[in-house]
Image (cartoon, rainbow, N blue to C red; front, side, top):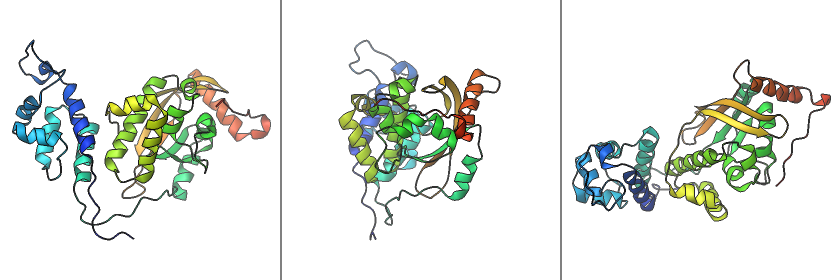
Length: 305
């Protein structure tokens, strides 16, 4: 059992790189500043951000070097506005600041707990939607039968851990079949890395998360490139296009919802469904019927790798 307050995270490199990357994305025109043909940086200068935020250049320079502990929320808000951060990026900045401050009391390590029975009952009742629960590390910790059928390549992948727990990040970056399964694979890698980046801001002391990021950084050039971009995504929804081994190409709107299962861990309920009256609904119905009646000749889903 831990005693005393948690040690602050040494996340100065993350703070520096994140603020510098956001600063580089904003042109003087976008910030409403005068322009010059002799600029040597692609975005704003540090002193320009300081002016926009209403703080001294020395104070902003110290902040961008990672010295964020003790910075007031008002200053962070002003910097977020100056850098035109979106809601997810602003949340990430505040998470970095929180992690850099000593905690008042110790917190126990997060456990890999499953979902309560009531949540499993909930997703099992969605017979015409593929529903699953994931944690912040993108482990799938609960799913209904249709989700397991729709995402069979993810569940069957060799990238699943020794307990058979599937992980979207490992599948996306380390399983060659992911490039075939995700029609929009390039978009998937951007979103996946951005989701992990947000989780790293929330939970800098998570050992399993650090190991996952280290594994992906070592084994995947694509992950290294996306991780270096410092993009952040917390909530997402949209259209998922899959090339399923059994039912072919299918296009499914999806919605992600926060699922408050504990005070610390982030859990997310994601639901894939089909637009009524479309061929994609028919494909999903076929897959659902196979799961409901396995004796009728349910196909065996598999993929190479």
